[in-house]
Length: 277
Image (cartoon, rainbow, N blue to C red; front, side, top):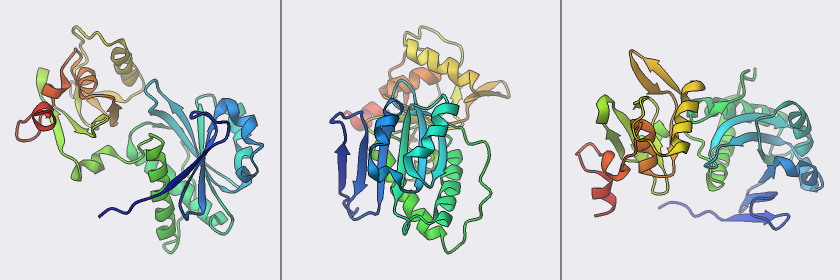
């Protein structure tokens, strides 16, 4: 049986999309969500001077991560001043801060290194960290770092951000496929969204695709290298999340499609047959 978890949230200005902190019961780590326009206001919060790591995030129109940057801080929110001047892409900062007993300098460096590696492995979004930190994680520190990172993943998921590699979740979720129009694509259904998995093939020719947002997303994916041509076929090099099976099918097939019928499991049953009937 899964262990229950209790979270406490503070909305500093009373707005759900404003500055807020999240803390798991009995944890020594506090998460702070700071919208970029409210950075100056966040500096007035005394607890935001502690050490930790942070994520700078650029969200797309569907509030999913499009770009991400990971760094460490020894003086809390003031570290974001440099990024406010030098980095244009981000619109939200998410900071994981703790006291010095929890986050020693070695712990911070190791956690930053580990988080960057995991972000690249996820293949869900563009990682702005081009230089890998030159830090070797001690084998005795690794269990603690993994434990903290598990908490980071959990908190990020509650905020709506999936950090793990979608393909690694296949063991726990049923994988669906579509083979229309001469391509093969794979996906996983989570109830509230549908993930199209890395290495899925994409039909780039469009026909009766009325969703302008999907059309623009396809064009952007081709331009930024998320879709590449391999042996005459176009292949998705990252996993992408969609708000519905039909949006995922339209992205892959290049035309309006009923995703509840287009996506089938290994036994040939559609999403409609499994979840609606």
